[in-house]
Length: 141
Image: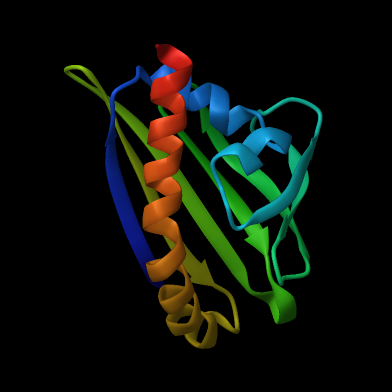
């Protein structure tokens, strides 16, 4: 079940955004909802890690696909067999890039989680992607 798609323009090249994506512990610089994050090893397909959002339990994730610096998908494992996939795409455009987050849920609880996540992410995700774009632009300047 599709939850939300958010796209924002960034005045930095895709490589600057990718640098921020790959720094999982450093994501607190641009994600105000994130308390901490970690990854076991390199930011590559098959890597696993954890994130802890404010007011949420720690969640495990796995990188399902990774094509630097244009696309990666990570899957978060939710209670009762639920899964949430985050597809991150960075597309080069004149003067920078477009950053897109596309989120969906699946599994036995997907039909319950979808509307809840749509409400939460509808509020939290747009400013997060805007801050990611701003931080990437500062890195590049």
